[in-house]
Image (tube, rainbow, N blue to C red; front, side, top):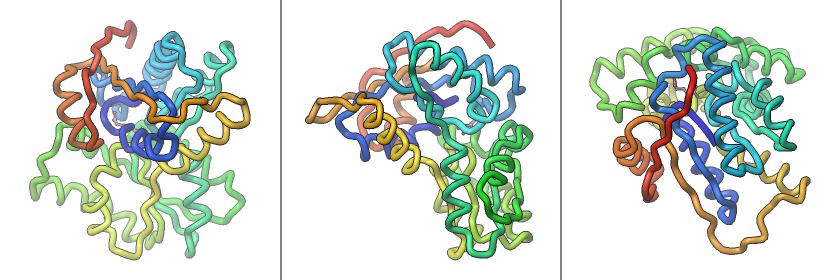
Length: 264
Ligand code: DGL
């Protein structure tokens, strides 16, 4: 599983709960954070490089736990993984499915990084859902960075997030996709700003269900009956990753291995 930083831990957490006996390796490409400000070409390159690293480590399935990377890199990662007979599960499609299924007024909001919004992946994924939906997509350029820094939440941050949410409120959406895996970490703030009646959609649960389906269908589910292992690899400072990751995952991360990955 990979992300640009700690955001993908929101997906990993669901996987650790839903598939406790499996082993996970999580790669945080934090030396290249933020992905949300990168070009599509750059993101494709980062995604392929991250996936290659995980495949070389023996991954039996790849999870793209980053919406920006999935927007630009999913096809390229699928192509690479297919050469080794490995399937890829990504965010975006699962949230689009959930949002289309639960919205009552057909007005769906998307809050995501500039790379994800400009890449148009949610608008396309929602258009595939066979429902007449009005989509309001908003980029929140500074939000992932606040979370990746480990906060703090000043009044200025809250005001900034309020401004991001304003077009969603004006559009009277009843469902908002948190289209960046960092955002569930600030769910309470978003819920307060958007109001109790707005449903927030995140990917973790649906991604874990998809992984389970694929592993079972391909006979790849582990025979292990005890708790599996989870390990962390990052490209930036392992101590900061460990400190922040422990806080967010609320599980001990153990030693975080630092790796150098070539490229963008
Ligand atoms: N967690 C990443 C995503 O889901 C984005 C954070 C970043 O900008 O690197 O898009």
